[in-house]
Image (cartoon, rainbow, N blue to C red; front, top):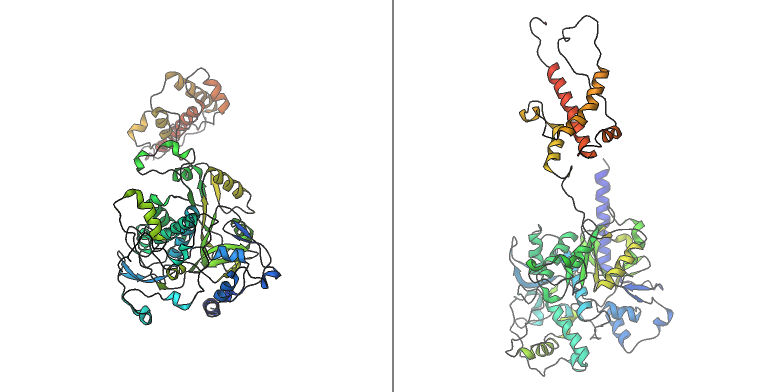
Length: 564
C-alpha cells in the first residue's frame, strides 16, 4: 500500500533536486579541491592558494568575468577548448519523422553528447591534443541569441529561419582573431572551424554529422526521429555516419557485449573505399588511420555501483580517453574530466539558434583549393558564432549522481597506442570491459568428419516407427562385429530362463537391457578396425536406444483373446 506513495515521494524529491540544481546552478560552485585533474588523458594541477591571487596575462580576468569563479588556469584553458554541442532551434526541418522537427530540444540530449564525443575525437586528430582555443571576448547573453540576416536582435527568438547567402569572400580577408596568427596556428584554426561545420544543423552533405543525419541514422537503427537515443543507438549512428564520410580520417569500432575485438579494431583502421576490396590481412595489423572505440556499458541498476568509482576515474588517465556520454537519469551529459570523487561535464540542455552553414566557394584551380579553403574558414564564421560551441562555465558533479548507462569513448591513433590501451585496460581496479583477439566462432557440430558419422549420431533419436530407422546405417563389417561382440556376450551371460509358471506376458520375448560397455574395452576391441573412439560411442548409444525402442514397442502390443 505504501509503495506507490514512496515512489511518488522519490520522484518528487528527484524533480525538486533537479529544479534546485537548474535554478541555482549548484554544480558550478567550485570546491577548491587540491587534487590533480585528469581531462581526457591530460593531467592538470588542482586548486592552489596562490591561484586565488595571481592572474595570467588577462586570461584569468576573462575567466572570472565569464564564470564568476576562479579555476586552475591550465585546466580552464583546456576545458574551454573542448567542443560543446547543445540543443539548437530554427534549423531546416528533419524529414522522416512524425512531424518536421526544427529543434531537438527535449529529445536530442544523447544525440548532442554523442556529437560532442565524436567532435573532440576529431579535434584531437586534426588540430592536435595540445591545441588551445585563443582567448575570446567575455561571454554575454547576446551570444545565446545570434541574429541572422532576416531578423533583428529584438526578434531573434521568433524569427523565421532561412538559409542565408554566402558572405563575399576575398583571399586576403581574415578575421581579427586569425590576422595575428602564424601560418601554422592559422592552419590549425582553419582545421578547427572546418571541423565545426561538419556538425552544423543542416541536411547538406557538407555537414555529415548534423542533427539531421544523426537522427535519420538512429531511425535506421530502430529509434524514431524525436525519440530519446540510448547509448547503443548513439554508438551505432556515429559508426554509420563516420564510415559514410571517409574524409574525416577516422574509423569506428563498437564493442559487443562489453568486449572489444582486436580484429574488428584493425579492420576499422584500414581505409577501404570499396567494401569488396577488403583483404583478410586487414584484421592482422594496424592500418592507416586512427580508430574511435565506443563501448556501451551499464554499471548498476538505479545508479553506478560504488565499486566502479575508481575504475571510472582511472579511465580519464588514459591518453586515449575522449570522455563519457552519460549523465543523470533521462538527462545525458558529456563528462570530460575527473577529480577526486567528482566529474566535470558539459551540459547540452541549452537551446540556441542554429548557426547557418556557409560552404566555401568553388574554385576552378585545384592547386589553390586547399589554401583558399584555409583562408576561407579562418574568416567565414564570427567569434560569437564559434563561441557557442564552447562552454565558459565549469560544472562538476559527484559520481553518485551518474546514470549507470553510459557510452565510453577512446581514440587510438596507431598500433603503439592500441598496445598501450590494452595494457592499461588490464590494470584497471575492476574490469568493466575486456579486449580479446577475435570474436568467438561457433562451428557446426562435427561428429567425425564425414556424413557417415552424422547418420550414426541421428540414430540415437530415430523413432521406431520410422522405416529408415529399421535398418542401421551402412558401416564396415569389421566395425559391426567389433561393436556387437561385447553386447552379445553380455546379453548372453545375463539372460536367465525362469521355471516359474508363465504369465500372460511370457509369450513376449523381451531382450534384456545390456549393460554399458567400458570405453577402454571398446577401444581395445576396435584396435584393429578403422573406426575412432568418438564414432564407437555414438554407434553404441544408437544400438542401445534401438534395443530400448524395440522392447517398448513389443510390450505395448494389445492382448489377444487367448492371452486374455
